[in-house]
Image (tube, rainbow over all chains, first blue to last red; front, side):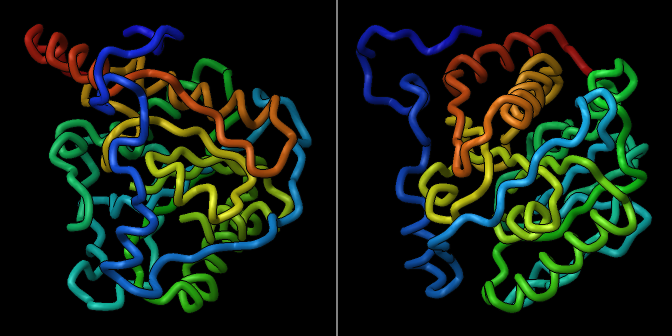
Length: 177
Length: 97
């Protein structure tokens, strides 16, 4: 594993230059699914860390479609997307989880869910004391919803409310898929 | 995903995301992010490579504690070619969790 050197690269291959592998992704998706991509012109107010990390309760939110094998999967075939989410116990392990989502390659994540949903790495960070603790539940949904306004009013609102009021998280880490 | 990050941050909870699409992250005006030049579905690297998975998380935590400017996107300058080569070595060794 080497850091990208400061010297000019001999190749334009993005795998070797450290550039975005699929440039213009926003534009590409917006052309394929008109209206599904969004822009914002302002930032929301920047929150501040109230505690040191080793005193913080950390949650994790993912659009990967990871869920407990015992839970029903979300609807990956609906033309507008599924505007619900699943809670994933933060104590879960790779063997108890499964991925239901068609919009990204998850063959590697099927081998090791931590590739997209690093639940076991977060458990380690909590056990080592790098972070204070994990919220009892993490959150998972499936991306590629075709109605951003409805998404903001449902999934985004509901998860943010649960993160603040039920899980009482101090910090949220998020990963799309 | 960005809409959720904004909704959580707006409730006073600091957030940081990881992204493989810097362009999409920029237009969403997100509070903080770490960019990895890797493919979709591999935001934390490759299977069984615990070090690289942790590296992304540490970078996210570091951004949380050190960056105060809205819209900060930190580049994690590790090439995908190097990650894949490391993954092949792990696979050849039969490594599993």
